[in-house]
Each structure stands twice: as structure tokens, then as C-alpha cells.
Length: 121
Image (cartoon, rainbow, N blue to C red):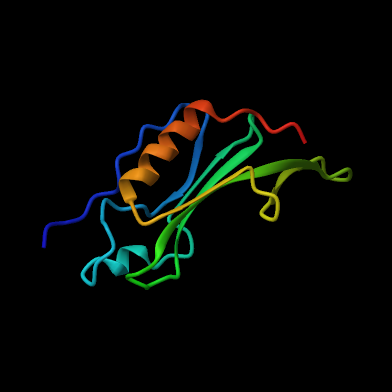
């Protein structure tokens, strides 16, 4: 079997790739090990206060689906250390798409990174 490449994505410059395990594979018995991570892709955009997360649910299930979510972020400043951290609101998503189609997910990620509005929390 040829080496599987990461899924090509057109990501605009203001997005940070936290991790990328999103390979150019569709679910099959031979490729499920590429879809067994708790998160396949995670992007952050601190100027928009949004994150994009992709996983495959249920893990290791050939009948599963890609789950794409846009998470609102909240900035926290530690008053003592002045360190900045960001909290993700996983309970109140901005957007969610579940699909068995990798190509549909790719198109949606590429649309979101271009068009998503800032979170005004």
C-alpha cells in the first residue's frame, strides 16, 4: 500500500494548526487506523475567538462519521501571573456538521476558515 498523505487543506493565514492527523483516506477496513484518534484536526484563530475541531465517531467504527465542530473561545487573563489562556465552550457550539463524506468535510473546513465571523462573547 502506498504511503497515505495528510489531507490537503486551504487554510487562511490567521488560523493556527494545533494538530493535524487528518489523512486523505475514506473509512474502510484497511484505513480505520488513520481514523482512531480522539481528534483528527484542531485549528485555532484567537483573533476570531474560534476553534475548529474534527474527529471521527465512533472511533474505529467503519460505519462512523466525521464530526466537524466550531467552538467559541473565551480569553482568560490570570490576574496574578498575567498569563493568557483560552477556554473552549464545547457545550454551546457555533456550528456542527456530521458527515460520512471526507470531501464534504474538506469543503466545509475550507469555507469556514474563509467565512466564519468573530465570536463576540
